[in-house]
Figure 1 (cartoon, rainbow, N blue to C red):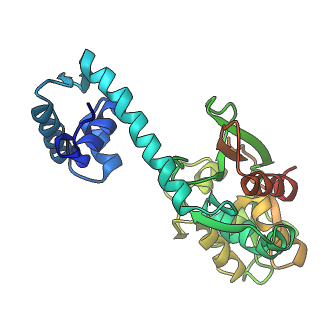
Figure 2 (tube, rainbow, N blue to C red):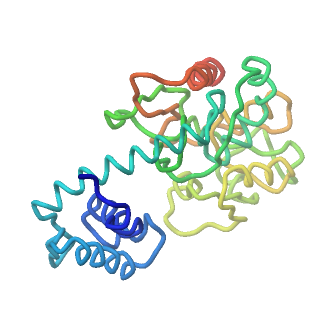
Length: 290
């Protein structure tokens, strides 16, 4: 006999249980759900009271599923996956593709090529999400992502190498005091340094101490400052190749160390991908691949 909707547990309690069951930790679950740890624990207790049985063993460090909890988690996870798929089909047209990229890649490489993509794939609606966070393809409803990383990737992901992270020093030819012919380390140290979140200048000079200069939370902002003649930046050559070719920036030489990451195009492995997703995947490989 089917269960009456009125006897089903509250959806929030089921979600708290599903996330806690994946992480086996209330703190990690609270971070994913964006609520307090106490709120997650309370929702799980509400579910256990509703069902009249324990789903977790509370341990000094983390959680362990009971036998019944483990079986229930498998069913609840499948139910949420089914709801997600149904919602995705309802909200997304077949020709809409969502791509997640870093803010710098979006500003320096994707946006300048949007007209070329539209010309090549006129029926595709590209939706861009610019973030440094690693994408969860199901949770964030992302089809493709371009990220820095190193192979191998998890078996559930398909990854295609695009280009290496070749680090160089760049500055505007109009930067006061710049000698592009003899850019020695001492001369560079005397000029304004532009910092981003990578801390490359400390590695360049072999120093752990903080170095003076303007600090930006995104590489694209540091490059904007370099273009404005405000200082020298260390960046991936691919991000500034167009500016180097046009003479807006000067290449002052290699950074002299490995960034330890490369750029990859990534998507979730699937036996069948929508045609629009495959088309954008192929376009990105052709446009950005080396």
